[in-house]
Length: 350
Image (cartoon, rainbow, N blue to C red; front, side, top):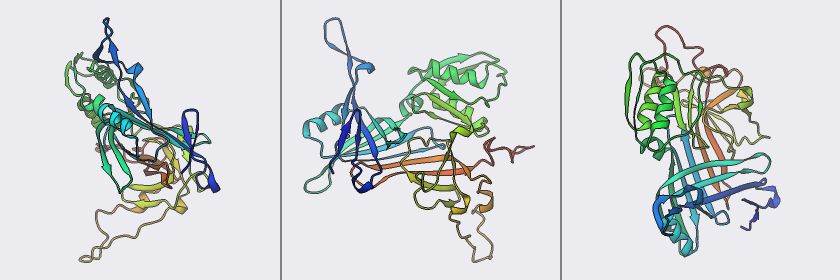
């Protein structure tokens, strides 16, 4: 399929209006290394001079998945029919990929940037070759990193977060950290020795929170009680990108839309409850009762139709029809906080 290139993005021609002005940019990065005083390359990487391999003009298929259950994001990219020299460079030197996508009218941005963990070449048929790339975001900084430090008695959970991020071998930038984290001081000092993920997971487990590496590469921590501002709610209708019919599942409300990079973890999406497809209850034939592991549907629908995103998947084919975002959304019973109806003596989400 022919394409046009404007500036730093590739656009698909709006032929017969089918593609609705979608655009994309897909990059594979190669590392640069610092030069010593003798003019020879060293083993020390120079991130400011890393080079880009722009493969946007080729047929690319991508899929990314992010959930609050894990701190890492997974992305897969398939690039078709690269020339031999470029493909060889990508296999031998490629260390990171970035995928940008969306639509022209204010709905375009970064979908995924991650470190390559596997890259290989496959033959699809007699003429087409596929370069397949698997990448992960957050693995190196959170799970393959190491922190060795101490914190004093009286430190708060926020102090622990800053110590873990600032004292790690590979320092982690700190982005949005929920104001809902408690301020109770530690009764005694503590030794930090292990991966950042270990200590961040402990903090989040005991404070009903989730952590992940944000779009800007900085650490994000949000609690389920954190209030969501109204301007962070995306209203979704068939006219603004809704695809098909939202479906009730036991995990939450499954919603599909045209590719939208604005949808992140913990984003709020507002839809009309009346269009959600209900699910038939499952009856245990031995007892005639509803299956015990099926959640009551009435408790899953938000009274205002606002659902917080707990899982996001982006799918795209730059030469095909697939260009969608799928999410699982959960009712918070309002934007004030997920726990407003269950907080009480002996009750917790931990």
